[in-house]
Every structure is written in C-alpha cells, then in structure tokens.
Image (cartoon, rainbow, N blue to C red; front, top):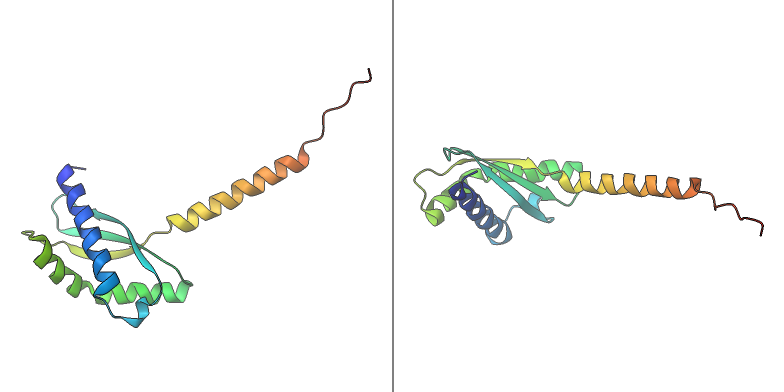
Length: 127
C-alpha cells in the first residue's frame, strides 16, 4: 500500500471518528462506536470502514444501519474537509477482531489450565 493511500486512510479514520463523537446525533449509535480501520482502494473509489461496537447483536445491526444511512452526511463532510478530487464511496463493516482475540485468549487459558492439571509432580528419589 502506498504512503499516500495510508495517509488518506488515516485522515478518513480521524475525520469519521470526530464526526461520530460530535456530529452524529442518531440514537441508534448510543453505545460506544469506534472506527478501527479504513481500507481505501488504490483508485480512491471505495473505502471499507471497519467499526467496533459494544452491545449485543440487535444493537450492532441497528448501529450498522444507522452508519449506512448517514453515509451521505459522512461523504459530504469528507469532501469539504479533505479536499480530495474524488471522495470514496463508504461501506461499513464489523471488525470482529476484538471478539476473535478474546476467544483465542479463552482457548489459550483453557489449554494452559488443562496442561497444569495433567502435570504430575516429579517422583522423589529415595536417598
């Protein structure tokens, strides 16, 4: 990925994060929504925005719908603030890396606990 694309991804992430904190007043976004990553295509036509959200599955779906309905607002703000020739089309996706990481940590803990249970103390030599 080129340095320019990385810079644009970072700028889009910062701008959208600021908008989510201050500009969007949708009640469906009541819980904490964080933008974890932005991936823009090299031609700057499309940007995939990965979000993380604290809540259960129905709340996550509502938040994703709220973000999708605010796409026009986000694009118009990005057009004004970033001064790009072409503002990418935005698509929002769930970043489940936190849940996957948590699951892996639980599995590692489980395997470690099972390994400790199976270990027997070394036999004592009679001296």
